[in-house]
Image (cartoon, rainbow, N blue to C red; front, side, top):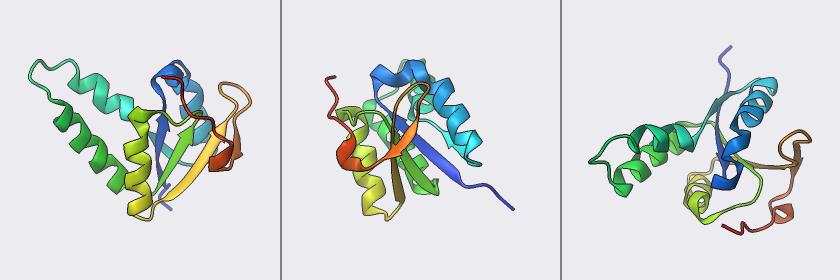
Length: 114
């Protein structure tokens, strides 16, 4: 039986928690993927454009089975959330980083101060 893939979104302020987020997703029986993987790789290339990064992130959203949002919704992840919604992807929301992660409703997440 194949495991579902989860595109795990979190703000730049929460990047320091990506190991906790990864463990949480794995503990839920899913395979995590992160936007920072794309950004970190392409930011090392001198000719990379913002459009290239956005295209790659869009491809990950399209391929993911579900999109999970951790912590506040910042401008840098809002486009991914909106794309997932348009594609009919299951969206789940979590708060309580780093050690008390629990599912919440979208309305429970606060806007980012980024």
